[in-house]
Image (tube, rainbow, N blue to C red; front, side, top):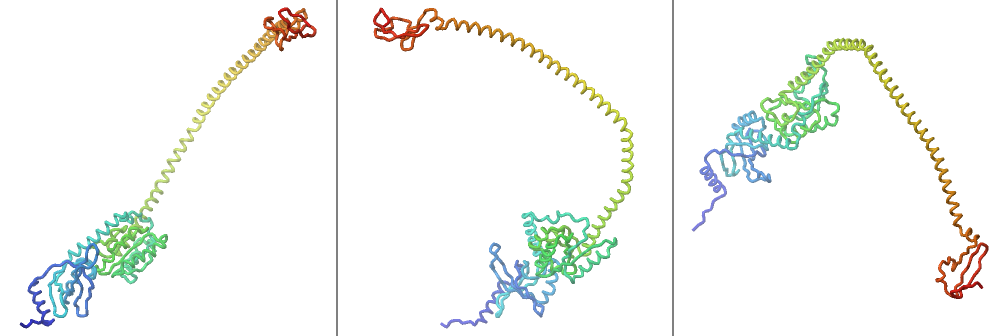
Length: 439
């Protein structure tokens, strides 16, 4: 039995017929656009991809094509509805037919697109950016800044060739009130993929000399609404939200707000509206100054009259007040004089009593001294009367044994030596027995 052999072309034809048979309908598919290119014939070639939401790695890919007759209508419709350029990196909901070509292989032919899906995805990304800024505590920082009373020094971020920049400067220069403004352009790319980096670089240049400026104005005007995606990035929004000067945005679109519109101090529709806002702010300041001037002209004279009347009333009250004060001081002086007189009298009485007490103490002391002297004389005579020498002179003697007086003869023993003192001298004796005799 011979084997059935197919050529590669025949096999691909078989695959093509199978694909058309199994997938004959049109299908709505959620994809992310990648490598979007339009060639000279008007056809658009692209890749449809799907990424893993956690790792961001590719999990599916298919070649896609939009024929020129469809692309010429689909692209403007999509960009008008979404304000988003039909470029790589955006998520879309497209209606496709599935095809297989013998030479080019598997592909998707895009026949329709649903802008609502992309709008929802863009809105989701904006919400995510705003939520992140809110969690970081910076979402409303720029809105909380106080707009300077005289906002005349204006740093403008715009394209140098933009018509909106010329309209803005013309509106400021030719304002109906003759106010002076001092704008200076910090050039930036305001459309395309370089919007974010270019505007952030301009903000950095302004920040380096921030003391020279009152406000920052970001204006665009005249560009396609499909180029607004560059203003919907986290880094640009964070830079605007945390900028130390109030930021006014006039990017030239009315339907949707970009993320930087939502974080800026003030959002207006167009560059001309931004100029009108600054002129009106200065006009309000001028009106306030005029009100203050009117108040001064009207109120100062009246205030001076009131103060003059108050001064005159004070002058008329001065004599009576002085008289009352003098009376109070006289009364106070009299009271002090009486208190001083009573104090001196009390002190004098105390001192007199102290002197009298001193005299009485002196008399009592003299009497006590005489009494003590008499007592001492009596004690002296008593001591003299009890003196051993006086007794010895009367014929008495004292017998001593070992330096101690002998008062009991029974305490003496034969052989003991004793000393007998008399009025004039002394002599020694030895005890012989109960009868004692001197040697």
